[in-house]
Image (cartoon, rainbow, N blue to C red; front, side, top):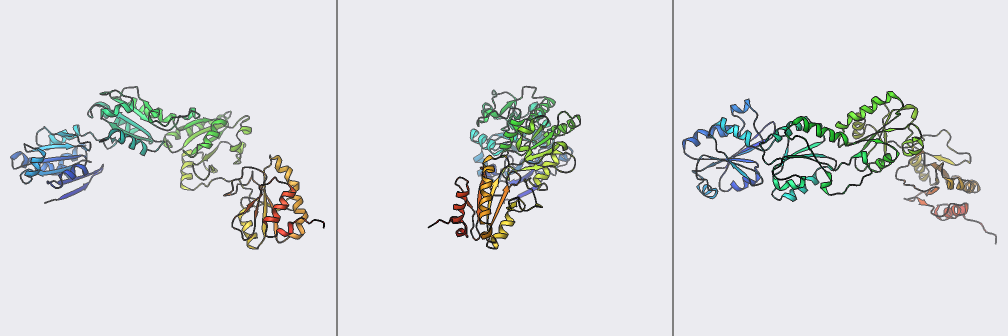
Length: 511
């Protein structure tokens, strides 16, 4: 008869399975790690059977007074009824107990058959810990590569390697794992064939950190993609929890934080596909600002592997060099200020407008969508026309205005300009002249507009050269772009070919 009893425990799930010839092999694969009790009609087997079932189901009185592994599965084999299985497994004596691991290794219980002795053996022998990830590789190199590839590129992994799983380094390592701030994955390696991957000698106990997160104090350094590049070895006492903890904290503290200058800021702005960047803009000469720098440093543990934190002194001539910062209208008289770049939304900026300068809260509000990305936008203008009578568009009015006019059957031609662009200044009189010459005949049919692209970011438009001219012809799905050199003649000719009212722009010639 095949019965399965399943119980859930606070630290994991255990199963008690009655094993026979048909399910024995399957159980050894599926229920790992697995302790199997082979029992017979002898007095010791009968005496210990009830205790074993109680331990397997988590109901033994001794378990309530001590800490024992709870994420182990248990199996029972009746040696009298399962003679064929006993012959196959070559179990010669009952009672017998074996602990099977997923890597096919096994251990035999050799103590007294009573609950106290068995639980003590289990506590000392069982090599898994709820705080750690264990390696039980069947194909070592493949397992290793699969594991490190699954870990987020910016996750820190702490590997403890020991020749035995009962030595004091494991205890110290587990204690450190319980206290370290978030950001680490803790793993225990006991297979000597994996030592070479950590740069350790066989039979040596060692602690190694694996991380693909670059040291931002030298952000320009190119890293190779071989995993050995990302290994950092602990040289202290692996049996000392305090030393391990200090090493892990210091290493994490160096990651994810940088004193930003103009060069590093530009590099960070190009790295937002990796991690979000949260940057404090402050004035180094103002002593009041130092406490906000400390807030950023304190946030490193909380945001480790979530965001890159930086502080940027905007005093002096930084304003001239850090143009991207000032594109988001940072007022240097209102420092300190938090800004962020998120690795989505086309490298969008975020600004922290209200409340205390809390970088963790800022990050969480961005992630939850409470803070929206910043777009340059002049908003709704009071003066809708410039001096030449040409309509002025902003981010807020751009698409609504064009849709409204196109729905009326009106074409809209738009020129995009930038203040520092000399070709834009040269083209402006030509653009105005084409409008002036055709103003009367195109009224109600074609509208001329302009947009200051420096102060207005338009969705879905990726304009990298100025001046830039587009025509939104009514009834057409996509706008047309003027690719020729921008002159009065080329604009007139282009409109005569692309506009729904092109005949109004055709150049009249004398016969």
